[in-house]
Structure formats: C-alpha cells, structure tokens
Length: 369
Ligand code: NAD
Image (cartoon, rainbow, N blue to C red; front, side, top):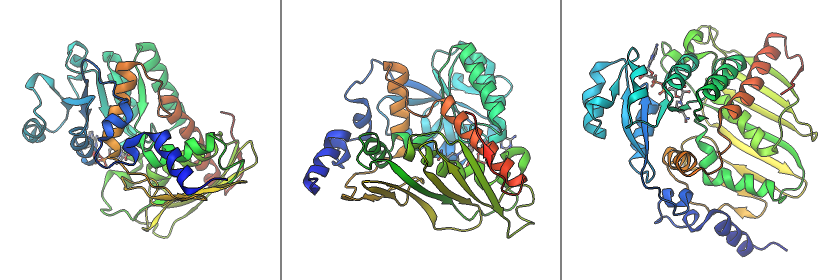
C-alpha cells in the first residue's frame, strides 16, 4: 500500500534532493552536477516584457549566460548593456542580425517577439547557423511551423519552443507518475488557462501581430497540458467561442472552450480566456488516481495535489530552469525535452483545428498528426 512517506521518498528519488531543499539551486537540480567547461551563450531578440523576465532569471543560471541582444529600439541598449554587461560587439538590430553568424560569443538566439513575427525571425536566425529558441505559440499556423522546422533542420541547428513548464518540477512529477502508471488509464482531463487582458491597443489584440487571441496566447497551455496529462495526441477537436465584448475582441478570440478526443478514449475539456481572471488549473483523472495543479501554468509558485496528498515540491524560477536545462541538452548532448519545434507543431495542428471548428459552428474536426 502507498503511504505518504513512500510518496515523499519517491518524489525525492525522482526529482533529486533539490525538489525538497529550498537551499539547493535549481541549476544543479537539472544539470545533475554536469557543469560543462563553458556556458551556453544566449542572445535575446525582441526586448519586451518577457525578454526582461528571461534575462533576470538567467542571472541564476549555472550553465547559460546572456551575452547578446537584438533590438530595433536603440534607446533600450544602454540599460540592457548596464544591467547584463553586454559587449558592444554583441548588440544587433533587425537589419544586421545576419552578422551573428560570425560571432563566437553567441550560440543560440532566443526569439521573444510578437507571435506573427516568429516564423520570419526563426528563418533569419536559422540562416546564421545559430541554435534557435522561439517563444510560444510557435507560429500562426501549423504550415508556418513546418517551414520553421524544415529551415532549422536544413541549417543543422537545434530548434526549441519556450515551453518552460517542461522543466518545472510539479509538471515533471505528474508526467513521471502518469508514465509510471500511478494514475492508471487516464479517463478525463480538465484544463483552463486565461486572464483579463488590459490595454485595448496592445499587439495581442491585433490579428496581424498575434495570429489569434486567447487560444493562441494562453489556450496553448491548456492544450499542451492535455497532451502531457494523457501522453497521447488528440484525434479530434470541437470548439466554441464566447464573445462578450465584440469591440475589444473585434480581431481575435476572447473566450474559447474546446474538447479534445484522444485515442485511448479520454476527452479533455479545456478553456481559455482574455476576459476574466482566476481561470487556471490542470486536472487529470485516471482509473487509479488523480492530479490537480492549481495554479498550473503561470510563473508560479505552482501548487498541486494528487490522490496521495499534497505535492511537497519546491518550485523553481521556470525560465532559469529552462535555460539551464536547454544548455545541458545543447552542450552535453542530453536528450531533448518535450519542447522541440516538433512539439510546438503538434500544438499548432490542434490550434488550427480549434479555429476551424469555431468557424464551422462547433463541427467535429478530425486530426491526422
Ligand atoms: P512585448 O510586447 O512585451 O514584447 C515584444 C517585443 O518585440 C518588444 O520589445 C517589441 O519592441 C519587439 N518587436 C519587434 N518587432 C516588433 C513589431 N513589428 N511590432 C511590435 N513589437 C515588435 O511582448 P511579450 O509579452 O514580451 O511577448 C513576446 C513573446 O513572448 C510572445 O510570443 C508571447 O507569447 C511570449 N511570451 C511567453 C511567455 C511564457 O511564459 N513562455 C510569457 C510572456 C510572453
């Protein structure tokens, strides 16, 4: 019989002592003490809100370091130089970024520009021969994502999507438990992610820069979560949109509910919104047990419980864990996590189907991955 002590022991075996020790850094948690001879040199492209979060988090990294920037706004340069000790020769703009090809101080470019620029920017970076990390959603459409993957393959560079949760300890633990059969056959999933968006003039509400609305931006967390909760790829999708503010959400989706059918028979009931708060949860239930993460998808601290009790796991700074984890893959040849370009494409295929179902008044869309 499983006892709570067994459970805690399993967690500490599965995740390492760092999971339970607030004193141990998250870098050693993922690198398993394999500190390489040198760090992964990273350039950030598109110095907005999220780039700032990644840059601050990277100050905690042991295996990755911020060495360069790409920006179209010269007035940002001084502050970034000062805050992150960036050398002049590692500062680029959108017109000269092809010169990164010759720069040995940059191994990877991390793209944090608005969604609809991701494809163009990934193609440009891949052509420099540098590895690419691109923020979510990977692209506007699955077809764009396929072209991005092909370009990176042709250039011989690694290509990742910024799915930081794949290095997040609670998320990793529920995936481990599911893979170990601790929940039994997965019967149902119920995921939500959304928030009330502010400024009505921002790019996230413009189709030409955002590609879509809540579904693209944060619905992708509920969707990706349904894929890691089941370990399967959806075979059909139905979806509906509720628009309570047709003026603010004239160009993009506001609130979307969507259902995903999986080969094992489970259905994931998911939702996303740009128009209300307190909408964030992952819930998965199997024949033998369940897991609930709430909050599940934001920057944390993530919290959760299973049929065995509360998950006694220390959260980490997600972006630092992600960058140390990816450095370990690139520099030490560790197996790639579920955040490759192909993983991003799998979600784009479903997002395409969600929008198609909405356009067709909720019609069931079959998916051939
Ligand atoms: P933001 O508006 O704060 O930053 C976007 C940056 O892109 C700005 O510096 C802007 O100047 C630059 N940019 C370059 N070309 C531009 C153009 N033509 N139009 C507008 N801006 C242009 O946005 P953000 O919140 O940092 O989001 C950027 C990306 O990061 C998005 O794809 C978003 O989905 C993603 N993101 C991911 C997470 C996560 O947790 N993984 C969190 C937030 C944002």
